[in-house]
Image (cartoon, rainbow, N blue to C red; front, side, top):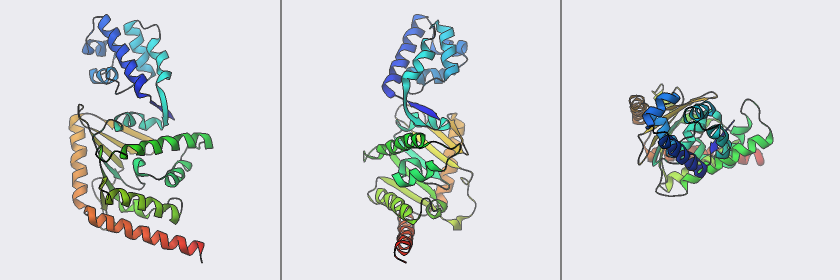
Amino acid sequence: MAIEDNPRSREQYGQELKRRREAAGLTQEELSQRAVMSRTHIAHIEGGRRRPDVEDARRLDQVLGGDGFFENFLPTLDGREVAEHFKGALEFEDQATVIKEYAPSLVPGILQTQPYAYEVLSCGYPRKSDEERDKLLVTRLERARILDDFHAPEVWALLDEAVLRRVVGGPTVMCEQLCHIAQLAESRRIRLHVLPYSVGAHPLQAGFLSLMWFEELPPIAYSEGVNSGRLLELPSVVRECQEIYDLALGDALSHRKSLDLLRSVAEDYEHEAQRVHHP
């Protein structure tokens, strides 16, 4: 489990790094060479967009004579608890102007309802205590607040039909979850597309993918598997991910037909829930 940064402290951290770098008479490129870090990573840290890991912080202390400042400052950045592999992606998610996601089997985090998220986080491994799970749940629900603003970020959700059919938490939970997504789609807050089973194999079937665009940063991609995630920033790799997403999107149902399917499946769950409660 990891801790996602506190934005204000992260900005202060970046400002202090810039001040000490300039006091040492080093450019970002020169510091990157001495600290064995990429210049882009250092620029992101100074801009308050990223945080270094412990090893990065130790090397910065060594190069800039920080007497442990950069390593010791790391705990002050602590904020929301997230899975270790998702830490880097979450930093960017808060800044994105456009987010396009593909989900192969579960509803994407920013679209999850509380009961659905509770079930997903309860079945994770390694097993978590109730307190650990509840902290993760709070973070996941806070992430959904980026949808409170109607205009930003623009969100596209490309869902495999398996997302609709996989019963998480029972029919009542699924009905509520699908109705929540439908409401977001009907209100034009998100763009919804479903890849039906009839498509068969498709370019994105390997796993979850999130594409993000920004006002002042180049686009990035984030892919996720079992207890793992990769933040992809190399332009050629990001472009390839975008092209793969577009190929899969071309096989998906239209926004309107996707919404119709979502509503139909939600109604099936509603009827099933009624049969369970009133046999």
